[in-house]
Length: 146
Image 1 (cartoon, rainbow, N blue to C red):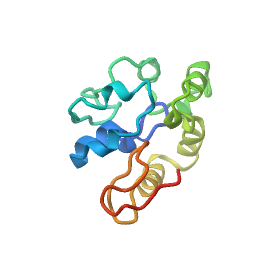
Image 2: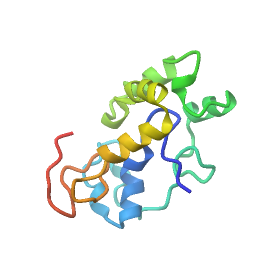
Image 3: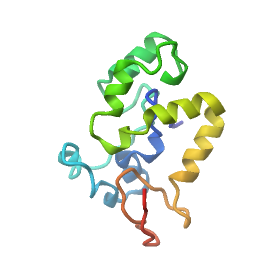
C-alpha cells in the first residue's frame, strides 16, 4: 500500500517520478528543475512513498530523524520547525517551499483530512493525476496555475 504523507510534509502522491510511473506517462518528467532533470530520461519506477521501507528516496536525514523519534511526520516534533526542515523548505526546489505550511496543516487537521485535501489539489478536474512540475493536464489539456 502507498503511504503518501512524507515525513517532511510533501505529498508523495504528487511526486513527478511516482505519477509518471503510476500513469505510465513520461510527460510528468518534462518540466523538472535543472538539478533534477538528469533523472528525466530514466524509466519511471514504482515508489510507495518515503514512509515505506521500499521507498525510492534513498538517503534522507529528515526521514531518518523522524524515524529515530518515532514520528509520523515532522509537524508533531517538539523541535518543529527545525533547521533541517527550514533548510529543506529553502533549498530552491519549488515543491519543497510549502513543507512547513503543509506540516502545520497536517498537525492541525490530521492525516486523513490532509490527504483528502492533497488528493483533491493534485487531481485535475478531469480525474487525471497531477504532479509537481506538470504545466498542463496530459489527459484534457487544462493548464495549471500552481
